[in-house]
Amino acid sequence: MALPDFTPRVGNDPKSVVIHLTTGTGMEIEWKDGHRSVYTFAFLRDACPCALCEEERTKARRKPGEAAKLAPGALPMFKAAVKALSAEAVGKYALKFSWNDKHDLGIYSWFYLREVCPCPECAAGRG
Image (cartoon, rainbow, N blue to C red; front, side, top):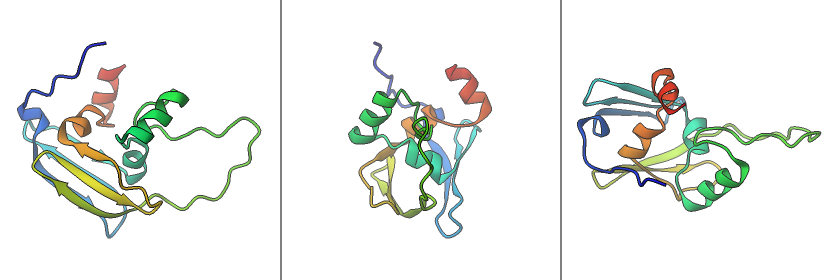
């Protein structure tokens, strides 16, 4: 398996970042190369890059940002809408969110956020 290339690139650096904590709608990033990414908080929570979430996704064969599937025959339970309670910068390379489900382990690097961009163009490029 090839290791990711973390070489700094213009496309991996944000020009502007807007996090909509008050409205709870998510986050928008305009990248220095002109690309624009829009992430819902539900997508970001399901894409959490921490080791625990990554292991859970791998076992369930889910991609980052893909919601967990209900087991066959299981009844859906009420689950509060995903909401970021706070967001903070981690150095100059990442963001960290505190979620309403008490989870706060994931560090979302700019590289990772660009890699999991949910826009149709980026999703098609991942296959």
